[in-house]
Length: 127
Image (tube, rainbow, N blue to C red; front, side):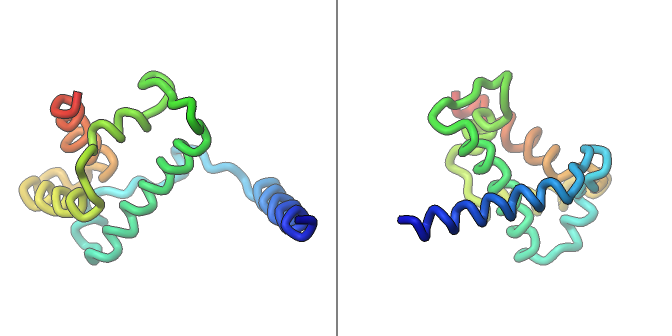
């Protein structure tokens, strides 16, 4: 028990040191990933991107715990309802199809495409 507590404290101290040493990036400093990167990426890299997005939403959901935030507080509930029944592979394939059908819109951010082409229609379907 004591060993676990010590390890937990070490991990927490390391995380705090890392957070203190690094600066927080502003939204304007984070590069936007668009269809241009999507269409030139391997299927494996596309899935990695989607896993990253999924992990970010999982972290936020875990942060809120059992107190699910309202639609006004977070995108999590809407993403969950809008993508109900989808898998990473089905989302990847839908993005492939959408960018192939809309080559004039490759500058559109991937997250925007997911939102407007999958989440919003899914919200209508999964009320």
